[in-house]
Image (cartoon, rainbow, N blue to C red; front, side, top):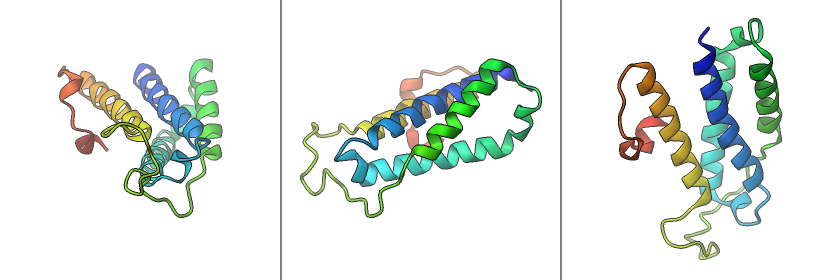
Length: 136
């Protein structure tokens, strides 16, 4: 088990799931299509990690164990909107053009994931050049 790699991945999930958990309480984000897509991506990625890392619960130190428990609880509290709409397209979202909290969080998360993957493969690149669509 590579606990450093697992800890970094869990920290990434902690960031994105924490952000999604908070944003679901924003009146516009909670019903936005961008939030729905971002939350779905984050939740499914975490579920895949949890399923693939089943071994993690048998040989785990306290820091990873408490983080994994917290993540599972966060994931369970995130609610997907039933009928999401594009809040920018409908004119409801007044954030500046090109700014979306959900998309911005996913971009940070995607850059972190890609950087971890590249570091593990021995290749370092500038994370500003990472395409979010390539990672997710």
